[in-house]
Length: 246
Length: 245
Ligand SMILES: Nc1ncnc2c1ncn2[C@@H]1O[C@H](COP(=O)(O)OP(=O)(O)OP(=O)(O)O)[C@@H](O)[C@H]1O
Ligand SMILES: [Mg+2]
Image (tube, rainbow over the protein chains, first blue to last red):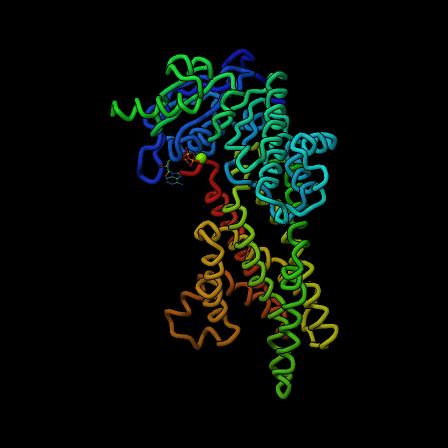
C-alpha cells in the first residue's frame, strides 16, 4: 500500500486550476478544498465543467495551469491512483463480459479479495444479474455495474459523475445510504448530480457555472443565504443572480 | 510493470475474444477456409499453389490480427474503459502486454490450424521446417497486432478503423512480392516496398519455402520484423495517453 504523506491533509485541494478543452476555456481559474470523509455535491448546468473538474481530480485531464493535490499527493500520481475510484458519466465497463467478469477484472487490477466483488455487487443491488452479460442490461443497471467496478478497489476517494441518473427513487435512496455509510468509514465522495433532492444528502455543495464556482455551502446554508425553502429555488436564484452580474 | 495486472488483462481480453463466436471464426476458420478455396482455384496449377500457400499461412494472420486488434483497442478507447483504466494504477505497458499475450495466443491457434490444413490435409510440400513457418506466422501476427494497436489511435469510430485495412494493409500486401517479383516493379515502388514491414514477413516466409539453404538474410528479416514490432509497440504506448484534452 502506498505511504500516506499526511493523513490529515485535505482529500482534494485545487488551486488556480485552468483547463482548456478544444480551444475554449472550460475552467478559467478554480480553487477549492474538500475535507476527508466529506460528501460533496457537484452541481451546475450542463456544460458548466463538472466532468472536466472530476477528470482533473482523477488525473486524466490535461490541465493548462494550477495545482491539484489528492490525498496529499499530486493528482494522477501513481501512488494516489490506486486509492481513487472514478465512475465516468457514461458507464465504462465491458459490454461483452458478464457483471462478475467485469468486477473480477477490475478487482484483479486492484488486487481486491474475492469477497470484495460480492460486496460490491450487493452494494449496487445487482445480485440477480451477476451472471448476465452487461450489454444485455438496462442503462441504469449498466451504470450500477460501472459504480460497483469502482467500489471493488475500496478507494479512499470516490469521484462519481452522475451515478444516479436513470435510477428510480428507491434505488437512489439505497445508493445514497451506501454513499453515506462509505463516508462514515472515512471515504471522501465527490458526486455530481442534476437531481436537487439529492443535493440535500451532501455535507456540502459546490455550484459551478461556466467553470466558475458560484457557491460553496451546506444545503441549509444555501437555502438561508438565498431566502428560499427549496434547494431547487436556491440554485435557480444563484444562477440567475450570477447571470445578472455578467 | 506488474505481472499480475498483465495476466489479468490477458485473461479479460481472451474472454472477450472467446465470447464473440464470429471473431473466433474469423481468427481460426477463415484463414484455412481461404487456403482451401485457393487450393481449388489453382486446381490445374498445383505448383503455383504449393509456392504461395505456405507464405499465405504466415501472411493471413498479419491481416486478421491487424483488424481484430485495431477494433478491440478502439472499443477500449471509445467505451470509456480506457479512461477508467488510466485513472487506476495500471501501467500502460501492462495493458499492452496483456493484449499482446491474449492476441498472441489467438494468433498461435490461427497459424497452427492453417498449417495443419495446408501441410497436413492439403499435403503441400514444405522445403524447410513447418515449425519455422508457424513461428514466422506468429511473429507476423504479433506485428499485425501491434500495428493495429497503434493505428487505432488515429480512428475515432469503428467505421474509420476498418478503413485502415484497404488503405494501410492492402498496399503492403500488393507490393510485398507475393503477387509480383519486387525486382520487376517500378524502381520507386520497389523502394517503398523495402520500407514496408510486411515485405520482410514475406521474404522470411519465401526463404522458408524455397529450396536450398535458408541463409543469413532470413535472420535479418526476422530482426527487421521484430524491430518494426517494437517500434510500433513504443508508438502505441505513446498514443495511449493517460491525460487527454
Ligand atoms: N472532449 C472535449 N473536447 C472539447 N471540449 C469539450 C470536451 N468535452 C467537453 N468539452 C466542453 O467543455 C465544457 C464542459 O464540459 P463538461 O463535460 O465538463 O460539462 P458538465 O458540467 O459535465 O456537463 P453535463 O452536466 O452535461 O455532463 C463544455 O462546454 C463542453 O462542450
Ligand atoms: Mg458531465
